Image (cartoon, rainbow, N blue to C red; front, top):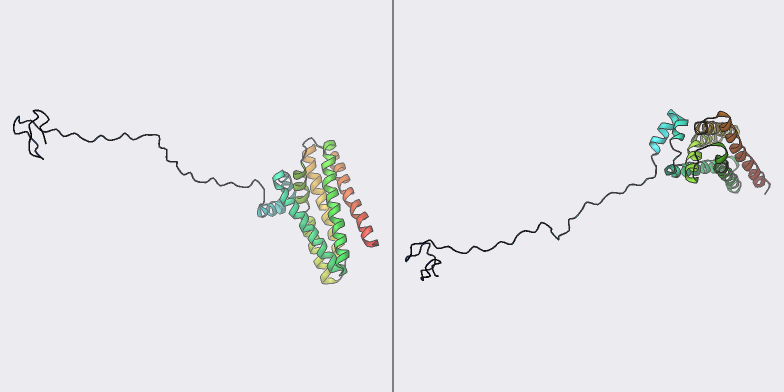
Length: 229
């Protein structure tokens, strides 16, 4: 190696030049600057996507038994339509079960249940078509399904226990009574909910009367056809 000051050759590893007595300065390796903009992508935690649908049945039943009108009114949103469809499906199942226990004829039981489903469809569409003439806040078809479906919860429960009582006591009085009582109770709930939307008891009464009149008429018509086939 050579001295960096005088240029004389000195032994390797020397710290001081023996000729000029100056310290030997060794060149340090240059360190590349660290770039702040790293090209390595940073893995991000996946964002969990939650459904907007309201499927909280536990909360629904708890609210319904405390305040039926309030429970239905808070579930008139389109996001609750699945609950409405499930309640209507449960009503159809209960009807099919009751008629099978009553008649022992699956064909007639299916026909009467089909009549009930058509009546519920008439109830839904009559509300959907009448709302423009009676209420200011319009519902989409999903919001209509939400309200009508949840208002039928009491109908499903009463009709179910009425059918069980008929099977036990071998009569048809309980199912008929529970059917009428459940339908009236559902109509009262709908009327109260509409009263909040219209701010008029008269308008809510007439709209409810037309809706459930359509339900009863369609059910009577289809039931008559089924029993005559």
